[in-house]
Every structure is written in structure tokens, then in C-alpha cells.
Length: 176
Image (cartoon, rainbow, N blue to C red; front, side, top):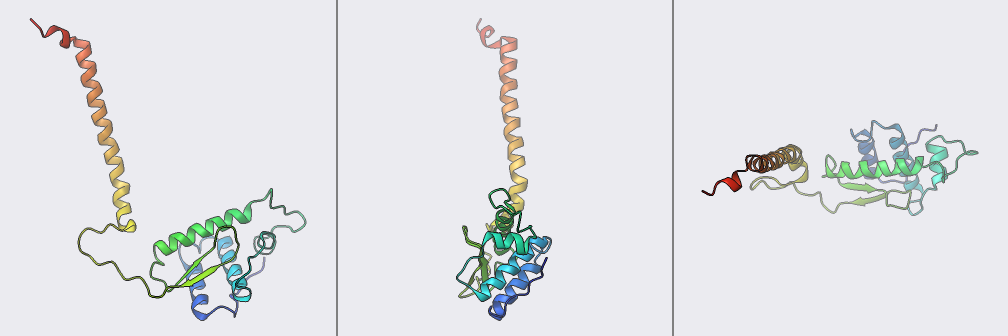
């Protein structure tokens, strides 16, 4: 498989952003995602308004045999690009939240959209408990099992109370 370098047609900031993405923990572990991202970046530098064909990604980037590749039976490109979209969204929601350039892959196309932020988002001002998704997620992961356990205990207590009441017949025997 070929190795790809980022095109000279990209701005230095965009090329730096591609390098930052490829080096991120979310993407660097997948050779296929890195190759797709670099290939699409190279294409964006040369032809920013055109989308790459699925067949080209399958054969030139993912190493599928051109004589045997049929996109109606082999979804490798669609799956990998969907994974890359997801990883990009995760990156910009987390470690890349303050990056100067946001790179996305629009649905229905195999091309990169690069959008410069007019200004980097400012850091949140601490004026009470933080409600950001990244900081609240560990609490949410711990709180829902506790809530579920509490609800199950309450339900068990109610059922036990009903069972004891019915088994002793206390409801009908209390009157003199």
C-alpha cells in the first residue's frame, strides 16, 4: 500500500492539524484511519471541492483488489470512513476542543471540510459545579448504577411487604 504525504496545496495550519489528528490517541492506533485521513487531506489540497470515489479509497488506500472490489458487497470504505467521522467528533469534543482548525467529513461524501475557528473557544469559567459533558461523564457512569440499585431495593421492599401482608392475612384479621 502506498504511503501518503500531505499535499503542498494545504495551508501550513491545515497540514499541522492533520499531523495533530494522526498523532492523537484516538486515531494513531488505526493504520487504516490514518491512511484515509492523509489521503483525503492530500486530495483536499489538490482538489478541495471534489469528493474522492469510494472505489479509489478501497483500492488505493485500503488495498482492495481493483478487479474484485464491488462496493455493494464490500462496505470497508463506508465502515472505515464512519469510524473516522466518529473519531474526529470525539477528538474535537475532547483534546481538540481548542484547536484552531476543525476537520470534518460530511455524510455522503469522501472529502475533508476544513473550517478555521474565528477564535479558539475560551476555557469555561469556574463558578460552581462544572456541567460539561467531559467532566460529568465519570459521575454519570457512577451514579446510574447506584440509582438502579436503589430502585431495585425499593421495588424489592414493596414486593416483600405485599407478600408478607398477604401470607399472614393480616389485612383481614385486624378487625375484632
